[in-house]
Image (cartoon, rainbow, N blue to C red):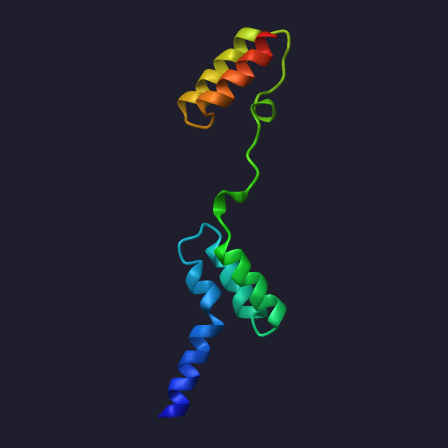
Length: 104
């Protein structure tokens, strides 16, 4: 009976990174890393770090990267900015910065 409890605790500890990542958008990648390379200390640590990392740490695109540069058509660029702002892709601050850059 004691060996069974020890085995269950070992499995829970082994899959701890996967359990912590259950609500992440890249859950299956973390699970596979944990499953296949978790037996190595490095694979387990990497999957644990990946599981506890914030999803929002991905670099945000700047308004200049989002807009297709076409200097001859300012109106078209401004309308694209408004669309991106309305869709929630651009914040008010990013919208104002990009608008100021377009208008010169």
